[in-house]
Length: 112
Image (cartoon, rainbow, N blue to C red):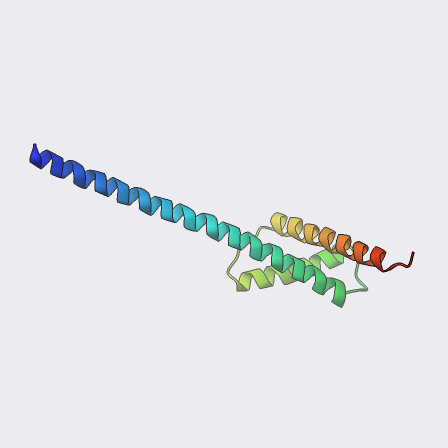
């Protein structure tokens, strides 16, 4: 019976260690996903402001292509992969945020 208890306690310990390792990997993956998404959003916001500043003569699709090229290059330097669909979505969201902030600032500056 003592031998059986010894094996059971070792098996239980191994299962607990395995579970702890698995939970650690899952926590790391969630953190990495969150941080990667934050970096993607920050890069897209920065690129949108840059493109708005540098390419005032371009409009619509041309500005989008410039922003996509710049964002793709920056993200690749970080080792972050992004699909074209996700990149377009994040850039459009950043443009919307930029326009909303610009309109708020412009409206607040108008004399009453």
